[in-house]
Length: 255
Image (tube, rainbow, N blue to C red; front, side, top):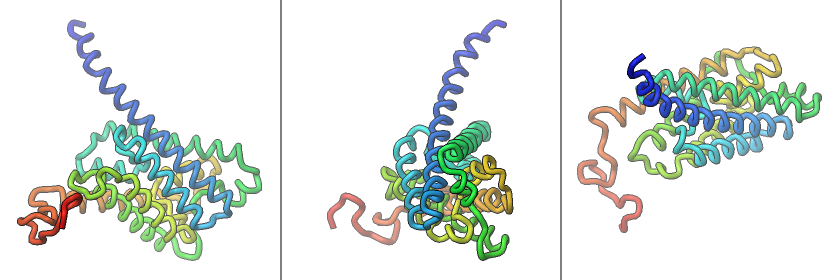
């Protein structure tokens, strides 16, 4: 077919680029589940340890490959970029496959590595509902994911963000914060991939809709809210300028 070779040459770099980004998402989601679920089993669910492992995994991986894929590692974060039209649905679908695939492989390897007693006792580090109703658990995961995606947009999507160059640190700290709050009650997953890997490999799906639905709803709400308030038309002038109504030294400027 005339011209088809030229069309393929134009498409190939795009598909290769998307694949490279997806690999970065695969590795990041793998690291999160491997470290978070592994720490959960190693420490019998000790909240501080799990929060530290989860936050560090995200902070390190987002800092390492954020310039390649954006450092989502979370279907809820990716959905936030889709609903605000900052990402094509086609690329998002590839991200979701990579994130869920990385989570599943991490859980599979953890099941091979850890003793059966530890795996079964902790349900392979899968998030679990304790002490509260399923409705309360849904609301908690929704709120925690809202915080996470809000911070992602404020630090990584907003070019004016104070922490643009170290967004991974702020995002990782938010993951740790959320895990500390929710660990005992819902696991503080804030991430469908974090739940999916252990659920799939351990074949435990009790109340699974909480960890799939709540983060997606919370993430979409946070993304839309931040986009509408601060990234759309009529967005506020950054503080520190005359037009902002609040003049103060900017970062790197003398008082």
